[in-house]
Picture 1 (cartoon, rainbow, N blue to C red):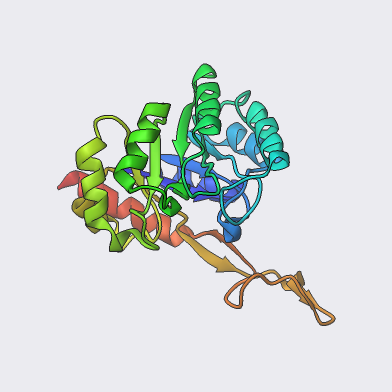
Picture 2: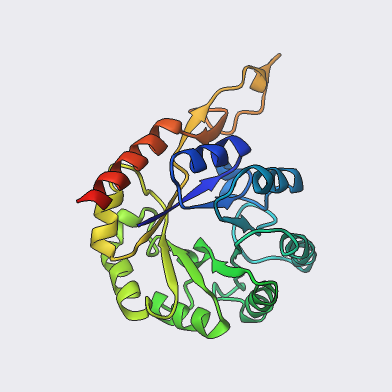
Amino acid sequence: MLIELCATSLYGCLLAEKYGISRIELNCAIELGGLTPSQGLLESVLEKVNIPVVAMLRPRPGGFNYTEDERFVMMKDLAYLLETDIEGVAFGVLNDEKAIDEAMTKEITDLCHQAGKKAVFHRAFDVIEAYNSQVATEKLIALGIDRILTSGRANKSIDATEELWNLNDGFGNQVDFVVGAGVKPHNMLHIRKETGIKQLHGSFSRGNYDVTTRGNGVTYQINPQSDYTETDEDQLKQIQNITTTWLNN
């Protein structure tokens, strides 16, 4: 079983290595679904952490149907990312018909492979409506995608275990699947068993507080529960215990 931590800070990545997490998906602004990490964050993580890192390539929050200006920025970011010592790039590009943008997906995938990096199609997969998940998977395989991060087209993967099982059973010998969305220490073994998928992805985070978020009637609070989110060390400890017990049984 491989655990991938969706991390947004050097702190979180250092914890990931400390507690035996297998891989990091590095991004910023997880509260917005995750955006391209800054140069400083990425270089700091690569300097101080020795486990594989996949970098997010996403220029803005919201969906995945990008303007020409946004695509221009993405390709600039991609050129930089591919010069670093990352394992791969996580991205997703859709058109206004809620289908895979095959031309840009192929371009990014080919550039990743030319640089010796993995091409990972992220959860943009879960909002495709132009065709079913089997057809979407076939198209991504034909385009050369190495991994697909998916919840099985549900808000939480725990609600789509049959769909995930069918995807992995049908295509798992051609592309790697990673289960994301709602993966927690308490349900990860259940998800692993019910989907047959060996790679699990989660932020394993908690809300954090910053005394300067509000003042003088001004607020930068994103949601009522917390000022921002950060990797939760307690959850990573739980995961380490669970995976160690699972391996020994």
